[in-house]
Structures are given as structure tokens and as C-alpha cells.
Image (cartoon, rainbow, N blue to C red; front, side, top):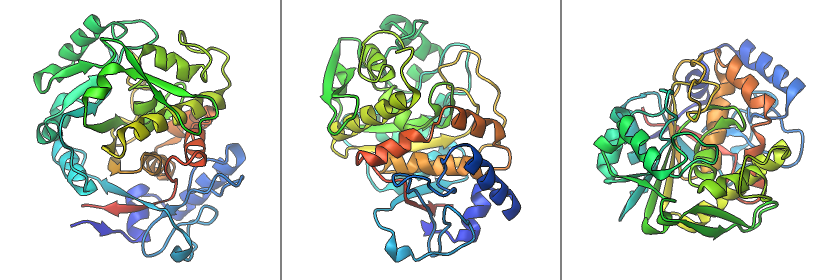
Length: 359
């Protein structure tokens, strides 16, 4: 049965560390970037709060209780510490929104040479439950995932074709989805096959990222579901459809990712769920052929109907963990939290949430 966990239980799940560590973590973050929701916000838009019923943890002083009735628009973020195929299926069931019709499962196919991407045997129970099709789009940076034919071979080599159909969504062209309220993007360009699906399961491997600081469901949608030209559009903050947009200001790139993700979510009109798997927590993305080895213990599987709240909860778990130094440095060196700040600013989800244990 789902249960709202107490503050004491939540902190034990998140950190398994002492209060002294949390305080030192807060002081360190204040000196660098005004980022995690365990830390106080420095500007009006940074308003995330890790919300735990019946009491809460505030940004400035994690031990102080505040009036929960004053906080609104909190999303439920479900958590299981069981990092297994069974845990993944149970977290899907906890969300309460069942996939229907033709279901796309957006995963990362994994760059050849890498091996930390979500493995087929780990996700097979969920794939079978929703009767889904794996979807991906080609890359904008060359390599074996840059063309449809070679990308399909990679998917086969990595075992995905053995458990479900695979669809490279930009194999037959692209489609443009409008972005409403964007600062940089007026459109996000995705694979044309997206129009064939009734429902999307955004199944992300949460980890660090060499450009975004971290990658979760927002990145898995904004970049992962964009066609090759759409990826370039995001990387260049809307200025070009080829290359990486070298020289694009970092915050502009992060803001463009938030806007692209919002455009895709708006297009799906709520027929979408979001899952972050916090295992193999490397500082590098699954797009690396030789990613750094994970330096953190696995944390759990989280899910929500609000992708902003979900990624925020994962970031908070990183900051609360005792073995997260390398991943925190990667996040802060890229100002990674800004994707969440901008997503909330443009009305795409909330950084406030309640953590709900299903264990």
C-alpha cells in the first residue's frame, strides 16, 4: 500500500547520513550555486521544497517544520528502494495512470561501448505489461546511432529487439510541435512517427551528463525524442539545425531543453508518465562510449506524473547521499539545476513535491 513517509523515514531513505552531513552539504552548495531544493533559494523563481508529509524539510534548515497548508501545487513522487524488474513494475502501478492504445517506451539505446544504460532484462516486465514499442531518434553527432540502419543494429546488439519492437521515430522524416511560452524555442522537431502513438512511457536512466549536468526524464524527452535536426535546435537554443551549437550560453541550452520537453508533453495531452531509475549513477551519460564508472550506490526508482517534480526529487536524493561528491560536482559545474528552474518558470510542472514510499 502506498504511504506518505515521515520526515525521519524520508531522510533515512534519501541519505542514510547524519544531520551534520546535510548541514555541511547545504553550506557547500550555498557557496557554489543556489541549486538543490534542500538548499534555500536565492532568487524568486527558485522555490522548490522537498515536501514530506506530515512535516517538511525547508531549504534553509532541514530540521525546521513548516506549515504544509501554505504550500500548494505539490506533485506526488513515488519511490521504491527495490531496484529490480519487480520494483519497476510496482512503481508503474503506483502512478495510477495506465498506458493504453499504441504505447511508446522512450529509453536510451546506449552508445556502443557503454554498458550502464537500462538493460532489457531489467525493463522487460514493464515492457510486457504495457505491450510497448521502444522508440528512439537518431543522434546529431555521428557514430553508429546517427543513421537509422546502424541505430537499429545497435538496438539489436543491446538486446532491445529481443523483447519488443523498435522504432527509430525519425526514420521517415520529422514533424514540428509548437512550443508555447518558450524564451528560445518556437518549435521542437521530433520524429514523425511520434504521431503514431497514443501514450508515452518516458523511462529514463537518471545519471550525470557532460553537457546538462544531469540527465533524467526532461533530458530523455527534450533531446531523446527530438529528431537529429531537433537535437541541434535545442543545443543551439533555437538558432540552427546542425551541429552542437558551440558557443551557446549554458543557461540558454538548459532553458531550451526545458522548453522542448514542455512542447512534447503538451503535445501528448497528459497521455504520458515519467520514471527515473537511479542506478549505475555515473557522472556521464549513456551517450558516452566509455563512461566513467559509477561512484554512488544505487538509490531507487522514482515516478510521477510531473516530470519537473520527479527530476527535482532525484537531484535532492543526490545531494542527500553521502557518496555523491562526483555527481554533485558534475551538476554544479554545468548549473544543471537551471533546467528545473526554467521549466517551473514557464509553467511546466512544479519543483515542489511529496515523496511517497511504496515499499
